[in-house]
Structure formats: C-alpha cells, structure tokens
Amino acid sequence: MSKKPINIAIIGLGFGAEFIPIYQKHPLANMYAICQRNKEKAEEIGKAFGIEKVYTDYDELLKDPNIDAVHINTPIQNHAEQSIKALKAGKHVACTVPMATTVEECRQIVELCEETGLTYMMMETVIYSREFLFVKEMYENGELGKIQFLRASHQQEMAGWPGYWEGLPPMHYATHCVGPVLALPKGQAEYVSCLGSGRIDENLIPKYGSPFAIETCHIKLKDSDLAAEVTRSLFNTARQYRESFDVYGSKKSFEWTLIEHEDSVIHTGEVPERVKIPDYAHLLPDEIASFTMQGVYDSDENQHLSFIQGSGHGGSHPHLVNEFLNALVEERAPYPDARQSANITCVGILAHESAMEGGKIKHLPEFTLSKK
Image (tube, rainbow, N blue to C red):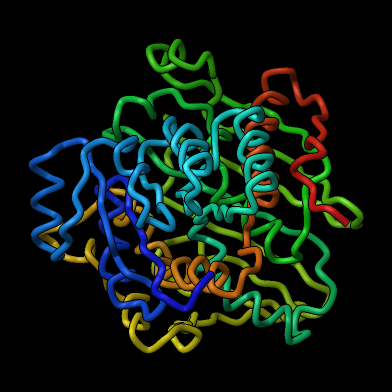
C-alpha cells in the first residue's frame, strides 16, 4: 500500500468501540468511518470520538471508495457474510472471532483472499495477550526447550448474553483456546477428535441441536510429533471465567493460574515457581502503548461483558491493530492470515461434528493448510 494513512472503518460499536481510539492514535491509520444499525447510538459514538463518517447501512459503507479496510466486530453469525462482502468490495478485512460458523464460509473467505490479493486477519485476542507473548518469548529464547504438549481451555457462563448464544455448541466459539496451541509452535491442525460430556438445560438444546455442557478436543498437528488438547464450556458448568493455556517443554513448562488474578506457574524440572507476567507495551509504537493497560471499556460506568469476563483481553487490542496495519503497509501476511484463521476456526467446527459422532476423527480441509 502507499505511504498515506490507511482509512479504517469499524463495523459494530459494542465491543468494537474499544478499537476506535487505538486506530485514531496509530501512526499508520486514519479512523475514517464507523457503522452501527442503531442510528442514535452510531451518531452518539461518532460525536464522542470526532468521527464524521457515520453509517447505519453496511452495504452503503462498502460503496465508499475512500475506505481501505474494515474491522468487523458484529455478532458471530454475521462475520462470514460481512467479510465476504467486504472482500468482494475490494476492502481488506480484520474480523473478530470466529472467522465463520461453517467450513464452507471459511473456504469462501480463503478463496476470495487468494483471488483478490486482499488481506484478511482474524483478530484472536489470546495470541496477542501479554500471557501468550511472555510464553512466546520464553520459547523463542530456548528456555522451554522442545515443546512436548500443549493444553488450553475457555470456560465461561453465557447466561445473560444475547439470545443467539443460547445453546451454541461449545466448540463453535473455540478460537480462544485453539489459537494459542497452534500459534506458539506456528503449527497447523491436521485432524481432530472430540468428545462431548454432560448436558445443558433442555430449553437450550433445540436452537442448535447441541446437548453437551463441555466439549474436549484432541488436535494432531501436521508434520509434527505434537498434539494438543482444548476444553470449552458455555452453560451449566460451575467454573470462574477462564481463558488459559499450558505449555509443557523439555526444560521448562508454563501453567496458567487456576484462579483469575493469581500468578501463573513455571516448572523447571520438578521445581515450581510463581511468576508475574510483564506487560509487552514496549513492542508497540509509543502512540498506542498505553492501550495495553486501559481502553474504552475499563471504567465502572462503561463496561462490556466480554471485556469484563476476559480480564481486559490480556492487553491484546493494540497488538492486534498494530499487526494488521503493519501487514498492510509492509504488504505481507498478518498472523493469522486467511488460511491460518480458517485452520483455527475449522478445528472448532469439526470438533463439534466429531463430538456429535462419538469422537470420530475429522481431517482439516486442504484449504486451511498453508501452501508450501
């Protein structure tokens, strides 16, 4: 792309408003437009942040030739359709998780990116959280030695969330636990096997036909001796909110804290040690470094449920924005790009299919695997 600032449009202003001031302060971006179906809310947010271009119709926004890229933060059932429309309109896409809810939708997005040369990045928070960056740094410095196994979980109670969440198959929104176990070794899932366990309330089952309280999936990584295990629950399971991952290495292992705000643990041989996770704002441009510790949704008066439950998403938001913008300017693939995003997302989709078939092995489709 040219050296001029990248004109960004943010779609969806619930959780999405969190990203407005980050784009406004990033030296590579121009926070150009916002889109929200509720006109009153859209205009209120536009006024609050000084944004003149305010849309209530996504299709009209996509006709604006000045928009270079869209950042989609809408309900999960809209992600694929809106990503596909944006790519067809010639816009680069950053999209909150998951990429899609079907394998076919993932395929369409990957194919469009390859046909158009446009960039797609799934904005997976965990793989840019301070906890992940800490473990990544240890791994790249050789402190962990050889990775032997990875495990992750994402457990939460979805009561009180919008109605489309009710009864959602746990693995259909599994990127927060699948992402880190693939991202750390920069691996790809080759096949999965998943078991469902327990049962949610009967009134929650009909919408998606999914009965399981918990789904737990084993992932075989391609061209590797590594395997990983991920666990996901959404309803009727007593557990404090937890996005976690554990990494077992030949020299050191890292285990996520069991209770939020306690310290995680590093094992060196049989010797455990509590560790305080540092912040990684030093990896960012000075203009947006402060956003690892604060943002729009960090006050008692103005909080979003995903931000509260996710403990601020580990300070990941400015890192995500920085990766997306730099990938566009440097004309390189972001992490995760379209194929990697599809691999992460399809693990969850196929894992649920496996659970419904009693643990049957499901292979990831070829389009989710990086080209040699």
